[in-house]
Image (cartoon, rainbow, N blue to C red):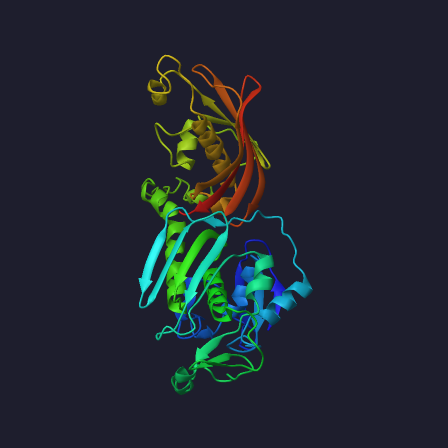
Length: 429
């Protein structure tokens, strides 16, 4: 197995170098096909077993992007822990990348039951895992709670070895689940005795290994999370189901936004000279000015939520738009009666809409929609009132794949009234 660096936003991927074409599988819970004693991911006929220990080491050390090459269908088991993987990664060293890290904050508690397992996750400012481990007979019941960081991972979790109960061994052998298993790479519990080639590495080594597995399985979400996970008798099946439910919470805002999109725009008719509309000169191009009719061909927004009336300049990574604020704006009825002020969030929306237009400058992006993902460093400096003409000035700072970032400001009579750094994602209509 070889760990290789990967560019920003690449995520975690496995590559089978022993197969023709060196096929790759993304470390994604949607690719999980088996959770019997380990987590297996598949894509087509390509499978990789026991990915959880490797992913736990990578996730525990705070790595977001990496390529893992394998010349077999399973990583080396080593000593049954993630210690060797962790030491190799720490020896190689990590590189901080330019892209901002975007952990997902759990916003709504999730609780689930699967067989004998109970798992939940609650809002928390970091990843914390609290776990209780025991067998069906209540033997070797252990409890441990830890906030996961690169420091606690390396010291408190990475060394915990996999384990099994003696009476399980016959079943595991018959089902081909522990080929290569021995006391060199696992701890065996027989009645009240612990069979191992060395003393236990932690007083609670069994439950700490369960937490190790949880970290590895939750890495299949595809991005770090901030939340407090509690688990009683966890399993790979339950871990992966929790990962799916967290992923559903991540996707929910995007799905809700899609529910309110306007209907798809019909294809443009062919020109009289027989050329396809797509061959006409693009609307969003350098040195172009866009009037309201043009804007309504580009943006899906309509009254009362179209926050730009005209584009006056498109130049490289910069675009300038205008919004004429009149007393007829519907929000002035309630914001505020007798003292009309344009809401700051609508100035932010104007920045978002103009920046979205600039993202459509590339021909392959035309017809797509720019979803507003986040805003940072937002400042509102003075009120905008009826009669003001707001100039919206945007500079695109990064554009990679479907994600774009921009700096924007709104000015009235040359004076800045609001500003923000905004992030977008392009999606199909």
